[in-house]
Image (cartoon, rainbow, N blue to C red; front, side):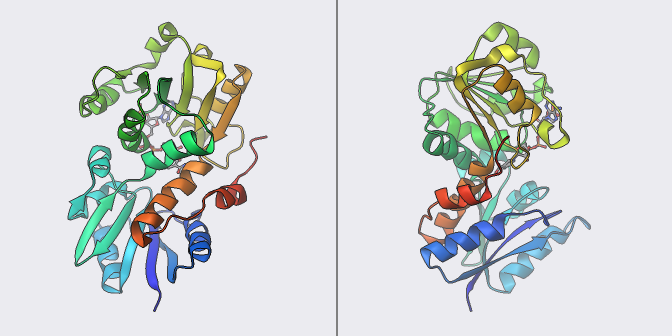
Length: 277
Ligand code: NDP
C-alpha cells in the first residue's frame, strides 16, 4: 500500500493541499496517497481521536489547517523550535509511535519572498501587520534573515507585545500599534498577515509606510487585488504579491521533511496562481 498522508481542517472543502502534494509526488516519483479530512469540531477530544485513527490506519504524516493548529501542537510528543514559538503546528510526522510537530508557515513565507520574488530581507526595513498564528510562525524565520528592522503591529497591542517578548531578538524587533506607524517612515517590505482580507477589510495602515521601490505581500491568496494590495498599488509600490507562493512553499517544506526529497515549486505556483488584476 502507498504511504498515506492527509490534510485536516474544518471546513476543508476549499483545500488545495491534495492537488499540491499530488503534483509533488508525481514529479518526485513518490509512492504515496494524500487525502483531505474534515476534522470534527466537537467534542473537545474528537480531533485527537481522528488523528490517532489515521495513525492506526498507517498514516505517516498530516498537514493541519484552521482551526486545528493549536490542538495539533498540544497533542504532539515532540515539537520543533519554530512550532514552539508559534504555539501551533501546521505539519505532523508520525514515527515509531511518536507524533512530531512542525510549523512551516514562516519558512514557506520567507522562501516565497526571498527566493521566488527575489527580495532578500537582509538589511531591509520590514513591517508585518497582525499577531495571529501566521505571525507567530513567521517571526523566527524573518529574524534569521537579518532585516535591519522588523516592526510588528496589531490592533490588540498587548497581544503583539507579548509575542515579541517571547522572542530573543536583540534590537531588531519592535512591537507596537497602528497609531505608531505615522512616525516610522517607509518600509522596504510590508506584509499583511492579518485576516482582514478574508472579509474584504483593510487594516488601519497609513499609506505612508509603503515605499514605491519596495514590496507589499498579502498572505491571503486567490482573492485578486485585496484592499491592502490596492492601497499598496495606489501608493506606487512596484512589487505586489499574494500568498499562493507561501502556500506552495510551506507544502514543499513538509513534503521534503516527510519524504527526504524537495519538489520543484515553480510549476505548481504557476498552476495555482490567480492573476491579481
Ligand atoms: P489569526 O486569526 O490567527 O489572526 C488574525 C490577525 O488578523 C490578528 O492579529 C487580528 O488582530 C488581525 N485582524 C483581523 N481583522 C483585522 C482588521 N480588520 N484590521 C486589522 N487587523 C485585523 O489568523 P492567521 O494568522 O492564521 O491568518 C492570517 C492570514 O494569513 C489569513 O488571511 C490567512 O488566510 C492567511 N494565511 C495564509 C497562508 C498561506 O499559505 N498563504 C498560511 C496561513 C495563513 P487582533 O489580534 O487585533 O484581533
